[in-house]
Amino acid sequence: MAIADQTLHELVSLERGEVDRSIYSDPDIYEQEMKEIFGRSWLFLCHETQIPKRGDFVEAPMGRDNVLVVRQRDGSIKALLNTCAHRGNAVCRADEGNAKNFMCTYHGWTYDIAGNLVGVPGQKELYHDELDMSAHGLRGVAQLDTYKGFVFATSDPSAPPLAEFLGRTGRAGLDMIACQGDMEVIPGVQKFVIPCNWKFAVDNLFDWYHPQITHLSAMSLDMFANQAMPESKRVDIDGVATQEGAQLRLPGGPAGGDNVDELVFVDIFGHALAGPTRDTYVGVTGSDSWRDSEQAREALGPVARRAAGHTNIFPTLWINPAGGQISLRVPRGPFETEIWWYSFVPREAPPEHRALVLAMANHVFGPAGLLEQEDGENWNQSTMTTTGLASRRIPHVLKMNLGRGKVVNDVDSMDPPYIECGINEHGQLWTYAAWAQWMSGCSWDELRERTIPPAVL
Image (cartoon, rainbow, N blue to C red; front, side):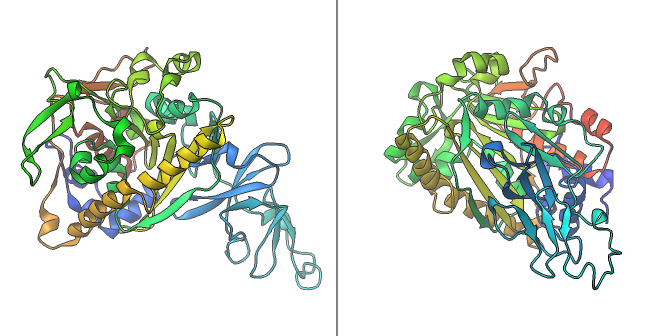
């Protein structure tokens, strides 16, 4: 059942800074998300370096659909629905590989890598040569395009071009990976399931309020020493203390104060970025000198080159430039999210650098990662409380620095619309506000207009 615009406005209030908990557990809302968001949006499929040779393929999710992303004989890329045109069985069970064709294991219908039906057992004897094989190939996606090696597709033929959809924030996020060199994905994508709603896993990437609470033990380890905020850039937050009575310190200060250490981007279609600046944060692999390269100066504006936070390309592509990683949050139902992690290195990176990146990927995020285990517990518990008869009536609060985030939006600048302030919840609130507009089912023109950021958040 479709949810009315008025109801959506009540579920997400930009003015009050509140979100109704039902959006995380209501099955009708989840069904509408599959249609209005994942059935229309441009979605990340893979990076071109994952499929360098003819016949190379990976399987990728598009909402409830799975597609095979295949390098063609002429070097182009196709994305084909992984479902046989006969009775619907998957024609490929592998996550990735190289193939000359795809054969359904149910009745043996066989397709070439372009999706053409090329073999049907009994075509002459049983179908009497009357089956039109040209009409029963694998179905392709409505649109497919790439941006600097990142492959996206949409199921909506009326969706705007990819570059337009990405906007300044989406392009900047991808450029923050692409500008680090001639980048390639390290073979092997981490995939694991967390019992939570997908929006919690997206929301968290903008959240710089939680690390020194949730991740207090991890942040005390030497492995995170080069990620620490300098003492000169920290401020005390009153009323927060450890059990031993030591004051906890968090990066950034109140908006309008002397400590303005965070940048937030809020952009069309719900794309956003939030986090510290390069002056206060160094990634797990150390240097960020790539930000001063000619390539970065051409691709990124001066504000974007300062941003060291996390980007989300709506709905679910998280970009972590400091770690050289991107992550998909794949919905598998209202109460289950599959997390996919991709790690990037320059092609010329020596083995020891690759080993460092993989070690950090395994120890920080991933199913055994110090941070993701703790985050996953939070997301799970937060999801479960949305099902309680009494607890689900309590709105989620996103009021931090509400009404104090002045948006600078120079349409002639390379830089995305941005806010400079201390710790805030602007990125989360903007994502939920855009989510409500997507869920309304409005046209692309209306959606673009409704997700132009306001002057103040």
